[in-house]
Length: 173
Image 1 (tube, rainbow, N blue to C red):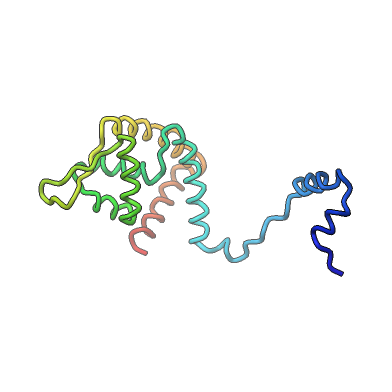
Image 2: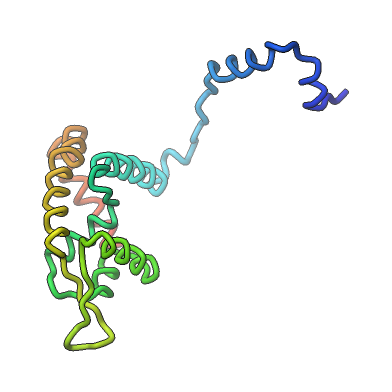
């Protein structure tokens, strides 16, 4: 015999529904078994990346910077006069996404696009004074909170080994 949800609810006593919700929240389901998935490098890399980004966002909450925005500001600082296509390409960000990212940074007065004198179709990127100040604060937060936590977790030797392995995948795969 099949019992519908409405039939089940109508037979409950007034306090039973609340009790059922409480019991359901107390009982924690058993974790899913990952099987072969836990041995898939791509899956483990993605899970690690999510954790690293979550920590980054917590550390940068006061500055409201995402990992991508921080990366753009760093590249613009280290490569003055380079155009937005070069920066987007280096970071692997698609053009439409990069334009939206730059629009956000510009609206916050962190960087500016200046028409290139060599190629009027191109824009070079520069940090504003506010952008330089925010980036300086962001670098300190990353070093003292985010990277420090990763270093504490991994240790220096493992950190260097992991950087080497990830760089190899990024450059050669």
